[in-house]
Image (tube, rainbow, N blue to C red):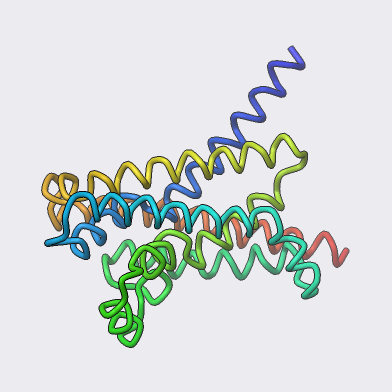
Length: 218
């Protein structure tokens, strides 16, 4: 019975981490943007850029997962503060997703867009960052690792990250077909639904942060 409860807790940690990262990375929305960016390119080039982007985003997110907490500790930033700040940041992203409007959190600015247009390394920018491994995803992976109570739970968070990246790669490889099937309206509907879920997750992060701060202050 105790073993079953432990296994259930591990899978619950995996499921929570998976849903959180899936909503923030948003493979479908990223695939729609990718399809627009890759229009006119060969299938082989699209495949190479997709794999390259996922590899870079994965490396960035894994680095934050493994060393993010130590980096924050060196800066004197507590987890409650990160939860509150990250929750507010994610809520802004959720608002943009619900209203289907471009966000400075995930979308490059005009000077960045102009730079990307003249660069052959689209896999690095804007695909890997900020579309896949943006501030929201980086904040979330640090928070998820901080909430993991044991090395096994941390491994479940990493496994959830890997699963989301696999889904993102599949979405990027099938971006053209996905964009045709969903259309602009379909992509916006999916984005809005994910935005509502993300808003709830952001509110929970803020509540956890406030609760953690009060516990430390008491």
